[in-house]
Length: 86
Image (cartoon, rainbow, N blue to C red; front, top):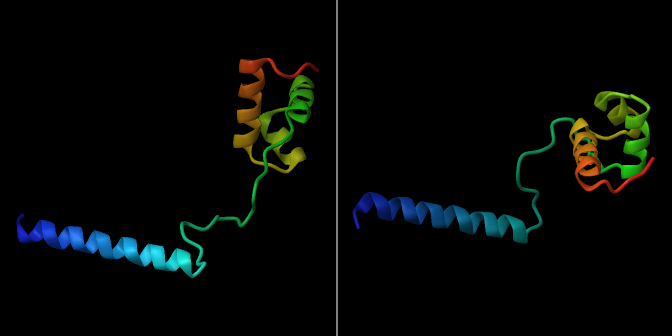
């Protein structure tokens, strides 16, 4: 193997070892949340009810204190599965 590949491979392995050590020490890894908020998945019944009343995704998310992503995800799940009757 060329020396540059060995160097790269060893640097990757040493970084992996450092991550393992940090996890073992209980450190938080990864990118922090920008706002510090933790969004929860809303109940499908609540989303279905508000959506059937004509509320927008943004209004539903604000009212249920969750993200627009989870509201849209729930609406798609309701449409695909037909799980919830309002």
